[in-house]
Each structure stands twice: as structure tokens, then as C-alpha cells.
Image (tube, rainbow, N blue to C red):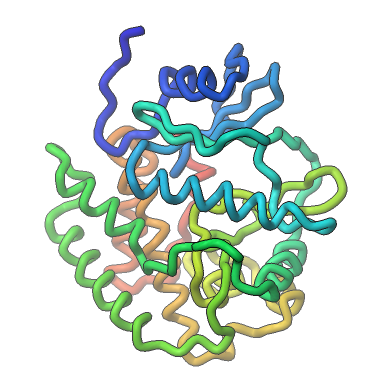
Length: 306
């Protein structure tokens, strides 16, 4: 089969889906694209299987292995915290994609911030996992995206924005290295928000463990912080109350906000050349960060359309 060359950093497409599904032994008839963000996520309707694919890079292979190992460990208890991946050898490595396979669990219910907080409280109470998990590398994903963009023939970022982001990233990484975090270090999800909750039929569980690492537990509580998404105060308060710790009382809480907001730029940098709406949102976010304008409201990538 002839495949169309894909730009560096582009998410895998249908040709890669066919390859990894053939390796895993599942039917790819009528695939439906569910998400196209940091991963390409497809539903296989005949199998009722969800396939998550990322570019085949050393970082993505390492992440996918962590996702499978962590999810299997957290789903093995009678009261699981994570969705269990499908049985079989995972992740599946193709020529251009690294893939993981999951049961499809459709639900019409909507999780609340309190549902998320209670799961995180249980996660943070666990001992360190009985297997290796990479330590937190602040803004590593952004650094990867900046390098990708710098090597493009037509970068999404101006030279000035690229330089500002690198300087800002360096400053925040240095600050993290000298900061004492009150909640200590343990296994963290790294991307904890209600969109990453799924109802498995009896309970809410966490999905999308791509950012899982051993790091400050406060990283999972950024949903409770004021930021450019302008979440309602009562929702933030419910989240923090359900978790049992008010992160805004910590004098250095703005460090976590700044890390989270910079981290979010990586997906937009990768998608900007092929998605005009992502390019527009990227420009909006960088302008507000560089000018210190906290009144500008950001839009989630899930709400973008070209």
C-alpha cells in the first residue's frame, strides 16, 4: 500500500491505523475519528475498541509503555482508579505510530469536579508504584514542540515568540528545581481534568495517562486554580473542597498555573501548520502570556474547528 508522506510531528492517519490494528488482530471496518489533539483517537465500531495513536518517537514509545503499565496496575484493584487496557501485548509499535487499545465505554453521564477530586485523592494516597516510572520533567513536551517547530521550513512561531518561550520555559524549570512542594512526590496523572474521566459502567475512572510520572502531587490540582480558562469559582471551590486541600493558600500556586498554561501550548504548536483555528488560538495564548493579560479567555482544543 502506498502511503502519503506526513509532515514531521504530524499525528498518524488511517494508513498507520490499518497497520497497528493488523498487528493487534482487530477489524478496522468503518473507523471513526474521535479526537485529533496530542493523539489521533479512533473508534472501531465493529469491535467497540478505541485506538489511541501517537507518532513513533522514543518519547511516545516510553509514554505508551508507561500508560499501559500504570493503567493495568491501577485497574487491578476491586475499586479501580484507571480504565484497564485491552489484554494482549501493548503498546503496538508500527512504522509511523505507537498505539494503545482500549474498550469503548460510551456514557451519557457528565462527571463533576468533585468526582475528579475524589479519584485524585485516592491516587495520591497510594504508595510509589512497584515498577519504574519516569520522574517529572517540567515542560518537556513544550520543549519538544519548540524544537519541532524550529526545524520546520515554515515555523508556526515567530523568531521572537520562539525566543520568549524558550527563556520563559528555562526560568520556570529552574524555579521548579528549587521549590518545596507541600504535598510531596508520588504518582501523578499529569493531565487531570473532567474530560479525562470515563464511566466504566459502575464508577468513574481516569483515562489518558500520557503525562503520568513521579512528581509533585500539586500538579494534579491545577483545575482548582484561576487561569485563562476562567472556570467558575464555585466549580474550583467544589474541586478543592472534595480533594481536601486548598492549593490557592500555598504562596507559590502561581508557579503551577504558569507551568500548566505553558504546557498547553505544545499541542497548538504541533497542529498550527495544518489547522488555522489552532494557529489562531496559539497566537491568542502567546499574546496574552507575553503581555500579562489575564482577562483573555482561552478556548480548549476540543472546541476548535477550522
